[in-house]
Image 1: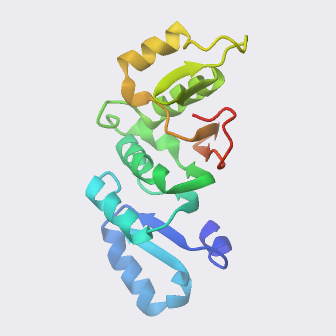
Image 2: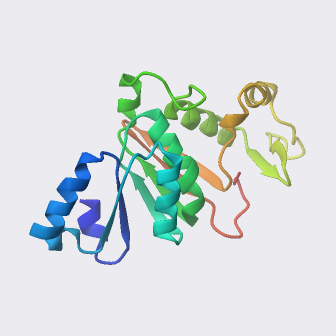
Length: 193
């Protein structure tokens, strides 16, 4: 539905994670080209960083909205996120769908974390007022003059530096099966990582 709704006014890049879908897409291009009008289909394994970097080259611009409805393993979700977040324009939104599926697959990403581990940690950091300026991490606590990182968060980041939030993250909203992450608007430094 979002593809049909959005394609009239935006470039759509639809990542397809199953190589077999490439044949299906080619058939649709021949038999029903109107179905793919305005849609740029990117096919490949989204857990493969080379594939992701090729997608970034193909996109060659920033995107206002990214909807990851591709692969559902934590490795696929987080590999895509770590590469595509930088392509998200300031003020943009990054949607991740079907997060419930990650719990049915063994393993996490290259560090053993699930996508839910990242969302939970980033949410905790945002609630604590976490931010980074000039490479220094701090949290704005209940007292505005308090700028240290709470010990529990400091220890988590020390033990797992890969869980640091992405630059520009301002909020996360999760519900059953999906999360949306927002990137700060240009010039907006309030509560932005």
